[in-house]
Image (cartoon, rainbow, N blue to C red; front, side, top):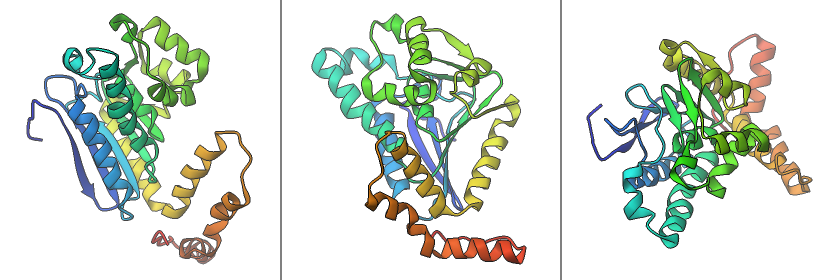
Length: 263
């Protein structure tokens, strides 16, 4: 890929797969304000594309992302107004766009995945990491806590006790510990991360897109703990009259591979 020292979030399409690449050469893909905004815009575009069945988020050059680009902090976070704008108007909308993407999102994690990089990965649906990948949120050394909208993803995966340990100690730790904490779906050899992410995305894309979207929507809703309304039950069971449901049953009974359309 072409080097761009300012940092970019790149979007490529391969059939039903969308590939989102965090690219900031020479900075371990540290995420600039511009990149956060691009991440929001890219996922907003993906969400509107019904032809996309799965998304892979990855970093360029052997690392996922080394957090936010601290070089921008003096200008972007100089006072309370700047801090609030940075976290609530720049980072939060980007993370929300990843979390609310209707298509399944797979994080392909290599190398460094700390700070904002871990926040992005935490909003993905599956996280596949290399054995030597490194994780953590060492912002206690920068003198500030994790913002509320950024903590939600970590809490959902690791729970309160583990999240506090990660934030209070500020350690950088390995993939095995990250999996024990609930941060990872699986660990593979470093040289197999890209292939493993592709295989996962392929399995997802071969399934019924409508079912995948409903599973994402319902799992997020059930996590709130509130009882479902009748309208929400109807939304869930709306798949009953879909072409994909009929095609899946037909193909199973015929001993054939289904051909899903998303309808």
